[in-house]
Image (tube, rainbow, N blue to C red):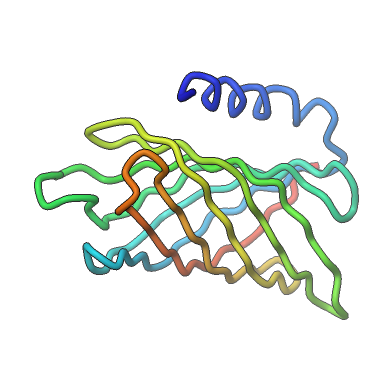
Length: 152
């Protein structure tokens, strides 16, 4: 199953830019917390490929300093792929994202993730949730802010 998810993620990153109407890059920074492992910082980069004015395929990476266990000395690398819905409300857009992710640390795992946030002009603020499906005690929440750059 892990190989299937990895192939799906690679497929999305290869095919999506070819058919995209808009391409956006979005660096982010924020704080992370896990109910079992305390607080940390996160740094992420997202790439969005517009399918329509309301729907995007969004993927990227997230590095965070929250340790999944007390024996780990490396940063977590999470790679989510979202189905992203962007709902316009006056000058802002409400973003609702959901999809799978792959985690790389001392081990490889897969899980589900969801994100909700607000985009104002080119600024973004949001909250995300990651649930590891292979190690059910691993839950991660991220609060992050970012700035969007349009590529195309």
